[in-house]
Length: 103
Image (cartoon, rainbow, N blue to C red; front, side, top):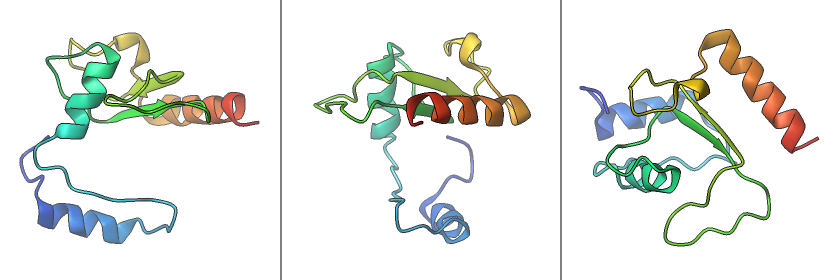
């Protein structure tokens, strides 16, 4: 999404965050971001720096389902600014969301 976002840069980033429960991939065509954007009603955009939380019983089809809760870090006008959280507020919202959805 930014200059310098390359396959090589992605490989370096993966090395900083290794966890067997996490799957990493590089999407040069931004297909995932476009699909998430369509599912959220932002069809002409690409979703990135979004954090989406789905109930355990969510069913995935051609497009991702609607998340129960989502937040982001974009100041773009198209992104719902009521869902913009940064720094401490983002960490607090993450914690609150995890506790409410997965007690």
